[in-house]
Length: 265
Length: 361
Image (cartoon, rainbow over all chains, first blue to last red; front, top):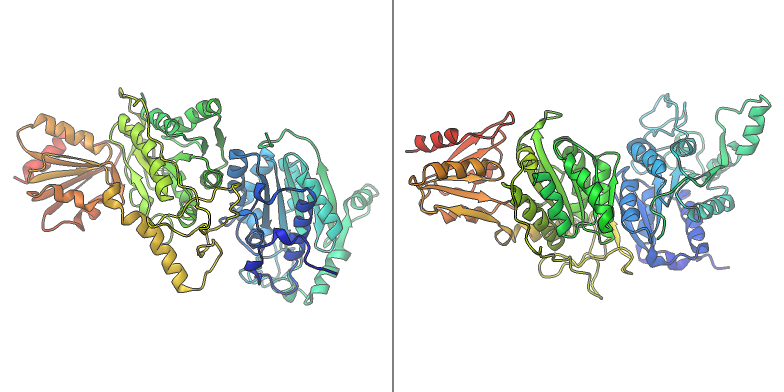
């Protein structure tokens, strides 16, 4: 069986990649490429854009035109590309720190404008590239190099933020749920307006190592067992049942047709 | 016509078709007019959420081939610094207009200043070279804004229109040229790598969507555009090329007026201070006072000072505590340099400047 699928989308001369052994980013990249390929988008009409961080290295391994920009600002560059030439397909890779800390303002405004692009956030709950500092998505109590006694700040619900800010399509899955993730991205690519896909990913090197999830499988297993379907969570809520604090919801948060900007002419 | 309007008209004449900006006094009229005019010419206006975003948007637009511009003033200019460095590193042509006001910080939003002259040259981190034009009249605002687009495209470098509140809000009669020369950026030739420079140090442009499949990164990169952040040679070669492609052409880029070149006392100006000097020369026609007005200050054209072979004193009036005067001083060959700083929002009076001439007698 060949494992070299969607080969034409990757820059082989850029290998080896910088992702650590067991990193979840490659899985998300593959899901995204599979979705793009399913859409039958042309390589020369597709632009991948990113900010700074592990996730943001992804466009550098993809064959298309790509912009690896400044920390937190990917969406501003993407806005310029898409508004100047709506005929291009735009996909943004970002991470939890890039998107919600330094880039938080650009995130909500891109959702509000509802520009026709797909934003995929690889949320590893940590600043991985720089060695594991806490991010706005590091869960309370978890250890990072800047939260050595456990994180104390409440986290951002990125999907919830995107819904509130106006994105047309919002979903959250994990690197364990590859089929669902791929489908969600594909729906995002085919939805006019801004689609936000949050992909929870394992970071065994910078996060798991300090938080009793030392192996890759430990972290993937944690995501499997701690994710709860949105419908089930809503049902439980209606029934007055409480959802454990360290659980997170997965599924499609919204799919709607608010007026969009930068749609193909 | 108002100076800020002349800026828009010059940009549109030069083919500007993308404006991403955030309103800020005293540059706001530029955003307002672009919002009014660009949609009618098939261009795109977008009001971004801040100046970090404005700068990002014009860089993104530029990679699709757009002639892209933003306009701001001091506080916004400070926010743009990060992505200005990105534009330098990725060789993205773009025009940034700074209608300067009094600083630091929020300072004097409605008053004139030239306090950002060093910031446009050294404000973003790392070694770099950029281009800055400075108009002293509304006519020059029109012409130099248009010229800025050609310079940005030719050198693939962010180009600044470093004007100020005085010129931005001044109304003067201007003559709109019948035609503005538009020199588009040269495209990447087949067989060349996307960041492989031609003889002039500037690579051909691999526009997004044109099939070149270019990877653009602010990291140190090789000629393919691929990151290579630990090889000292790759970094040195890249940054020196980015620097030299502009600095080595500074005499060719130079744009200036030199009046009374036999004079012993010479004013060196840029922007609104030139107006006061012109008044002094008008009021004292027999005094043989020299005047060098620079319309492009970065890269600094030090050879223009040699146009005054008899010069004994260079007087440099500026609307700051003395910024470009240091650039003048480091290129003198024995001449005395007199700094005439002025801050607070008003330009020098002719009397103030003439007294400085008399002091040199």
